[in-house]
Image (cartoon, rainbow, N blue to C red; front, side, top):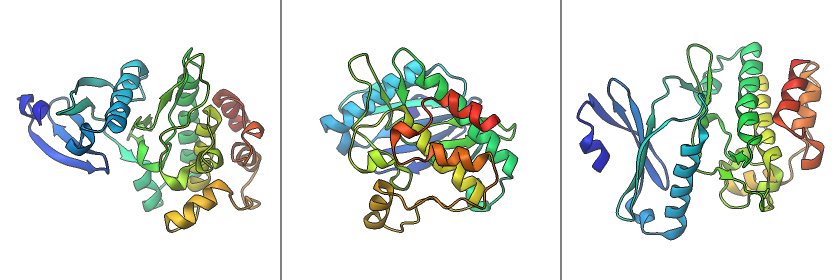
Length: 261
């Protein structure tokens, strides 16, 4: 890949993650990078190539210390990639698998996530992440939360205040996403609620084991049984995980205030 060949100060280039549409590499150097390359088959397709270009456009506009910092990109049909600064931390997915999170850490991670979303949602042109899942949350040894992977993100404009295109991990979809309806910033909040529930209980809200099971459960979730969770976190979860979008918190800031009290 072109950019990897140009990286003269790289100590090592390692495959980092092999996705369905793209390949990620870790470039170890003085300032390590993640390089995301769209696979050749999908470079030639307008839908996936346009989606990749949209991700780059959103990354260029993020300007948030807890989101990826774009370093370089190229967007040709023959080769498309971008590079961003590597975030040295542990994915929330790993912490959940190892069952190493305390209740206080779970609360703190949730607050930090909501703070990041508040910044993204309250812009003149709000950014909806749409794929808040354990693999996309990085927790550093300093206790900082970083939100990565904006491949499903959408930046709204004045004529469009809902998203309805690319969706994220099936087990972390909001009901409206799983039902194929347009979604908005409250859908991001629902996904934060799913993460908080999983951190507190040690199990996923959606217990499906295949797409055939997961999608119906995401579209019409079972009744939320959280009587064992203490207040005020029980009330917080009931609101943020409401099946009806209009019954959830109306902003990330409102959710933060509820979580604090």
